[in-house]
Length: 184
Picture 1 (cartoon, rainbow, N blue to C red):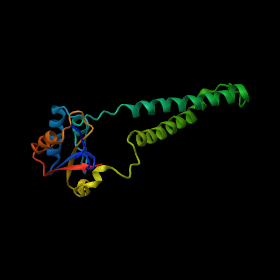
Picture 2 (cartoon, rainbow, N blue to C red):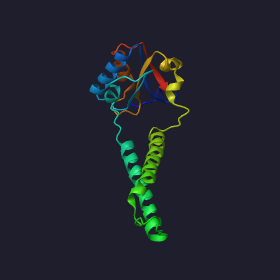
Picture 3 (cartoon, one colour):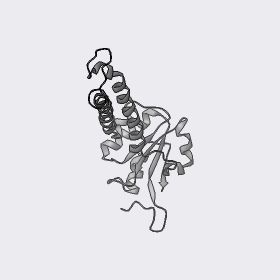
Picture 4 (cartoon, helix red, strand yellow):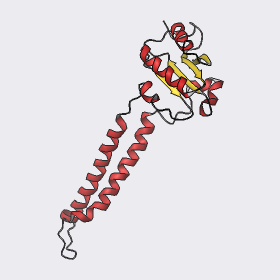
């Protein structure tokens, strides 16, 4: 079935269910996962232990990006200091060898942290699609309470199992406060 409300009506982003408690939201997410829904999202005013796993959220890319960037920063710093001190402009200072690696540690450490930190922030923003000043869930007036005391669960229309009537019946079976269609 098409995820459009009608042939000439507005396209919908999905169906949103509003819950009164964190446990109800967690139960809804778990039930949706068991029912085979994969394109879901949950909104809560505070972190809920186990919710990320229940909606199928897996964070695997950012730590890899941060590790690679940190290793790159450290390697570049160390290599540049070696090249300057031992190859390009060697100076005999106090009888130390040209390659005095112990003195390279502070700068290498600092560039490791700098590259890793910038990569963490930039990749987090990019992979989360931020900044995102507009999202279809903002169209629901009740969603304004998502940062206060309400819990929302959305099954997106792009989900392979999404059928407007069946998905609405599924969400209503979870005893939400209400289920509404979210327009794109």
